[in-house]
Amino acid sequence: MNKNYISIGKIINFFGIKGEAKVGYSNESHIKSAKKVYMLDSKTKDELEIQNVRFGKNFAIIKFKNIDDINDLIQYKGQRIFILKEDALNKLDKDEFLIQDLIGCIVYEKGEKIGEVVNISNNSSQDLLNIKNTLGQIKLVPFVNEFFPNVDIKNKRIEITPIEGLLS
Image (cartoon, rainbow, N blue to C red; front, side, top):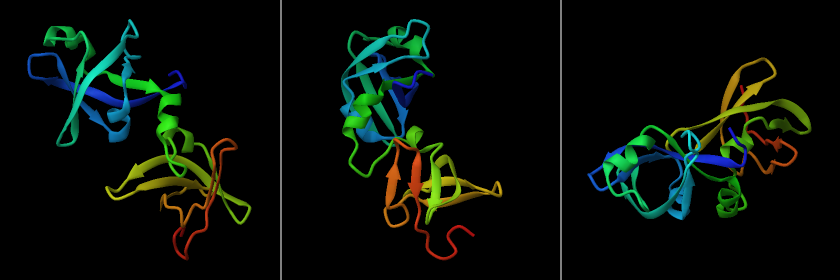
């Protein structure tokens, strides 16, 4: 996959007969702010311009320009939609990061390596870093400023200040 793009959702079905797509997503702000998306999973690698977005329960309904019925949309069903990574980065706050940038970061406590971020999960109230420690165990740690005061994506380095028992 091209590292210049990030996936922001997946066309899971059609909505009505006028070419609207029902899209599952993980970040509402990326969907709201997108002007165009890229269908990198399709053979033709199409670029689609967003005409309108509205939200249902746990999904978005997106109307693309020049897609006016189900037949125009059928080729994209089941495909992921992407935006430029640069566009996503411009929308992030100072203490927000892209999941793909956090994975692979080395985690240090007081200068000593304690593990590596291997995944990010969510418990519906917050993101959890999945840190694989030096023994090969996965520890789930809430990704909050109190525990992670320094995140250096450029150098793939994260400092942790855990409370007692957090990593045991």
